[in-house]
Length: 253
Image 1 (cartoon, helix red, strand yellow):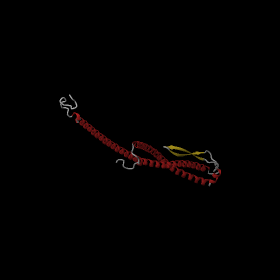
Image 2: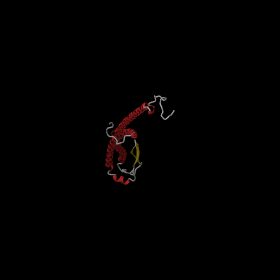
Image 3: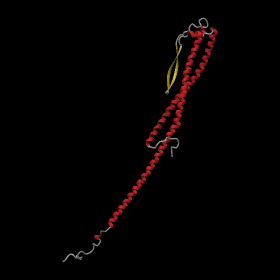
């Protein structure tokens, strides 16, 4: 019997065959859409991966410059961390979050909103002012690079998880669902063909029996008609005698 293999436990009818074909068509369409989604996410994932690598390299260089700048400030003015902490009143950097839709996947994106001005403009006024300003700009650049890297890293992790889930779905549809539906269709088709052959054979047998019964009835009818024709009535058996020569005893002349 065709359709051997994993299939659904279903009663073979034409309605079940139609429904299974519709399900197979839907599974094939879903597989195609998921494959396109996976390709789009993979392309974006590779682009983000390159940007993450560049951002990490840039972060290393910026943090190296920031460390040197802080060392110059410490050498020129001494420890100014307490001055900065005392004069800082509000945040100079604010992070804004937005969302980006990539093939139905929402990716967060972070942007730096830098407030102009500072609360510690007088820091380093006595000595080392130039080194303080340079360190300030370098660390501001480091913060911007860090926020950009955080945005890319978050999108990278989300895309990695979504691509894995999409790959599992694509493989499940391709290697489990579609073969099972195809085997079910083959099974239903073979069963329906077998039922059609059985019905045709049954009809042929019924038609042959009816034909034989009709022939037997016709033969019986012909036999009865021939029997009726050949049968002679009793009062006509001696009809060849002389009627005038016969004498009736009851009649007196």
